[in-house]
Length: 376
Image 1 (cartoon, rainbow, N blue to C red):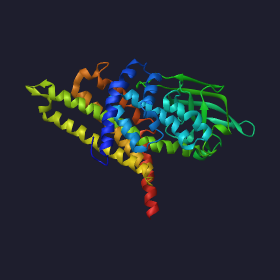
Image 2 (image 1 turned 120 degrees about the vertical axis):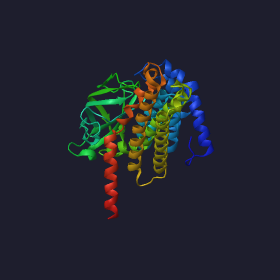
Image 3 (image 1 turned 60 degrees about the vertical axis):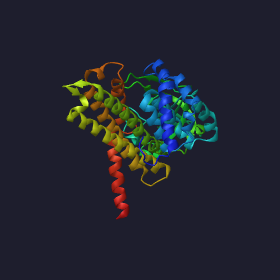
Image 4 (image 1 turned 180 degrees about the horizontal axis):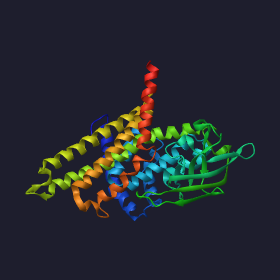
């Protein structure tokens, strides 16, 4: 763990988390079914006090948790992160009744939360979503349409759903609703994806919601979505850094022991230089993630740009590091059950979800030009 601005107790906490992930969480993860919600794993995350910290800690703590868990158990990391992503809007924008009903259950792992933003025609372009919220009386709506690529769907107990309440208004006509899974007209289907975490589609057939289900304000739901993503994007980077560090450490071990060409693999300059590059990029990504998280905790004005930069650099770096690790391990890394085979499947998705790399570049450029105009 680098120095950065971490206190000794933070460094010790990260070491403790890695040990807990290896000793108590990984065995539960291995018993789970890929592509399904692992409720025993969630319960253990709750009993360890990690799920409650999603709602009491800042962005840097969230990053430290995700990086440390990802290093030893990606399934535990993802289970924790999805609870936070799905329920953070309730924590930040929910009414007292909404928070009282759901946050204790999400925190102890007995209720599964999900964040339903993407649609078949509005993934990266979230402001173009078309799930329709049509007025039903004076205080209610009916939701009709489809969501896709929703993590924890269709097994979640409650969904943060973003729907269009004002047609043709772009980002200004979106409202966030808190929708329990047992609402009539709501159904879903699991998807079989490359990465092993649960993800699916949701179908809304005139699902009833009322003013009591609104998160924040009507037609202001895009702010709820972006506020959540600005918090979680750096921590996606932390997830990626944890995977990159695991791949780097495995590569150091392998190249130091593997006999090749009359010596060890590490004695070959081309190998040593690749390992050095893996370490360089991993550390650079880690520092950018920590900087972005610290900026968020300090309520800095450039959080969207920093969050986008952190997610972009870290996820692209992890892809490079894991791919290079596979190359240096050779065919053994492609065998089902090998750590790197697992990481290779896990590392691809973060470059797409919560805003693809191309979207992050667009955000960075937009923020840079806006800042230039403000200074002009």
